[in-house]
Image (tube, rainbow, N blue to C red; front, side, top):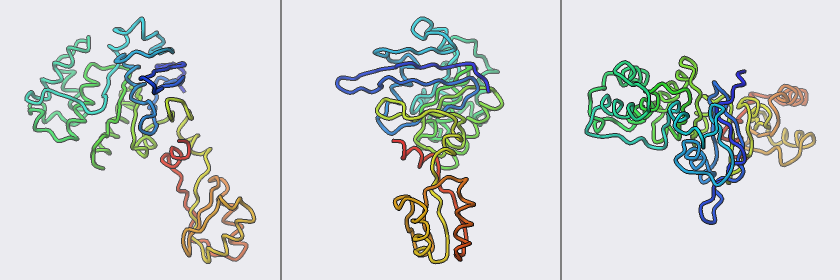
Length: 302
C-alpha cells in the first residue's frame, strides 16, 4: 500500500447563507487510489470538489495537495490536476482535436499533437479527432471530457459524475477508461458518483458524506465485509423457518419475503452455520444469496 498522501482535507468548512454545505470535513486520498466520493444530493460533494479545484474558497480548514498547501501553491498544484466537473463544455463547431489543443494550452504544460492523439486514443475517439463536437453523442462528449482532463498528463484526476446520463454500455466504457488510467497509467483518481455500483466496481477506498460531514471512510471491500448483509434464503416452508430463526436472531433482523423466501440480516461468515442449522432442522435450503452492495451500505449510512 502506497502511503504517499495526494489529497489531505482537514476541518474543511463552507457556508452559503444559513446553509452549512461542508461542516468540518476530513479525509485523505493516497497515491494510486481510485477514491469514491459518495453522498446524497446536497451532501456537499460538489462544494468540496470546487474547493479542492480552487474554484471557490473555503471558510476555514486545510487543503493540502501533493503535500503542498493549496492556498500558497495554487498554480503549481493545478498544473498537475485534470478535472471533469459535471457536464463538460466544448466549442461545438470545432473539432475534438482543436478543442483539446486549446484546452491543453490552458494547462500550463506543453501539449502537442502526440499528447492530444494519445488522449483521444485512450478514450476511443481517435477516429473522430477531426469531427465537430456538435456531431458527438452525449457519451462521446463525456469521453472527450476525460480526454481534456488527461491531455496534459496530470498525476491526479478529479471526476465529478463522469458517467452522468450514460446508458449501460456508456457506463461500462467509462469504467474501463477509468480503470485503465489507474492501472496502466498510474493516475490517482477521486471520483464522485451517484451510480454506486460503478464505484463498487472501481474504487479501492471511499468516503460517504452527509450534510457536509463524514459518515464513514475506508477500504471499500473491508467496509462492505464489515457491514451486515441481507441474506436472501430460498427454502421449503419459509414461514416455519422464520419461527426457527426468530429464536436465534432479533425479530427485526429476519422477515418473510414470500412463501419460499425469507431475508436475514447477518454477516457472510455466518451463512454456512445458518445453512447447517436449517438443514439439521429438516428444511430444504435451495440457495442463500448475499444481497449486500454499496448501494445498501450507502442507504444504511445516510
